[in-house]
Amino acid sequence: MADVFVSYARSDKARVAPLVAAIEAKGWSVWWDPEITPGQEFDRQIAAELKIAAAVLVVWTPNSVESRWVRGEARDGAERGILVPVRFEGASLPIDVRALHTTEFDEWDGDVRSQQVQEVLRALGALIDRRRAPQSGTAKSGSVPPAPATGPARVAICVLPFANMSGDPGQEYFSDGITEDIITELSRWRLLSVRSRSASFRYRGVAVDMKQVARELNVRFIVEGSVRRMGPRVRISAQLIDAETGSHIWAERFDRELEEMFTVQDQVVQTIVSTLVGRVQVSDVERAGRKPPASLEAYECVLKGNSLPWHGPNGAAEATRLFEKAIEIDPGYGLAHALLATMRSGKWQNDPSDSDAALQEAFALAKRAVELDANESTCFSMLGHVCLLRRSFDLGLQYLRRAVEMNPTNQWNAADMGSFLIFVGQAEDALGWFRRAREIDPYFDTPWYWRAMGEAYMILHRYEEALSMFENFPGRQYRVAALMAGCHARLGGAERARVHVAECLAMKPDFSIAHYVKKLPFKNPADAATLAESLRMAGLPD
Image (cartoon, rainbow, N blue to C red; front, side, top):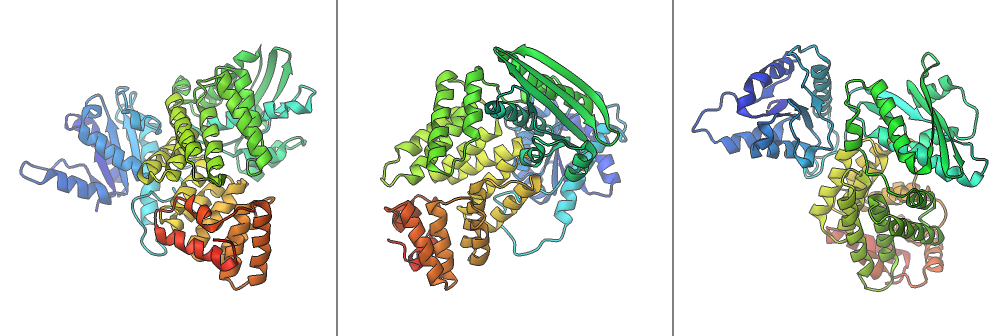
């Protein structure tokens, strides 16, 4: 059983050989089929070796990108979360792997001590260590990659909330939105470990000591800044600080028209990346980044909608209005389409009728989002979720995988994958992805996260743990009340179950078990039946 499967074009054997030697020098076994001779069962042997490898190293060259075998092997590695790609001669990558970080070997002189080779060895080592780590519990389905383990060390950085210097507290959403966008764009670079919004935003509006922030968030570098709107113009100041020494690496002030704000964001990101990740071609930022909205007004609508609490009817209605307005202003805004698709799918789930009109509209919006912005992982994640509701399980999983591959350090993508797996019979795997989301962002506490965690525990018949998750849900929601009633009923707490039944029916008088369970996309009918029985035991109406 080889540790590393190397996928390459035969004509590139000479340039692959030094890489293989470097891998073997680490004590890892390599399968790169140089000894296969005519007459052997190529397909069967290759498939067997590929299946058992801990890591797949694909060597992209102008020759290998034309090989359907190399493309297929790379796709298999990517789907299993074990692909480590390298590229020679600026080869044009297949479209389905362009979002993955690829180590460039154009300037490689054959030295195995080079930065490129060491980066590849670190990535391979992390995957090999993950397979060799002791496994607990029973074997799991191989159809879904497990929540990824922590990879090789990266440069740790946080972006503190940019101060609103406009003199209008109502503009906080604007400065917060700029901060979030910079966090999102920096997170796309795999050599940067970017702290989440919720971790950084604990320091909003307070005087902080940079070294203290660095200790508490375990980062080396800190970005801080301010935003001032002045009529049709905006002033954005930003600086990058080395917290270890307290020195300012760079500082810049941008005075621009509001329409140029997205260009300023790109410049801030490019400067940080070029400073901290010198080997990366900064010109790739534009190619790999999200497509910016064409309208500042549309962008502001999305910022405002995103800042609202969606789990309540008033917040959901206002967010829907704002996303609709953003699309009306800028029909090419992919993220706005994805967010509106989410609101439409929520409307369908709450609709007491049997109409699928809202779900069909959600599907059309989510597909359009991906068409408009193929570099925004949220668009793929939302499309995967809508496919789940349509019971297109394989297609949904494909889109969720794509979202995770595009941005593996996005806590929302990890949690979305967990939410998906609940309904396809892999609740234990789902818990791993939920834990991964909290590893990425220890302060991740969006309301639906706690409900989904509770649902996973319910499917596993771990009702006390499910209740502990539901209790973290802020405010009141009929779904959570119903689920808590079912848990208490299973645990013999009839009185507590009655309290939650009353709470559920007060919020949704027309609640019925049949309609509620019908809208839950369980692949396994037994899971749906078990949940329905829990609600029935609690006394909720059929």
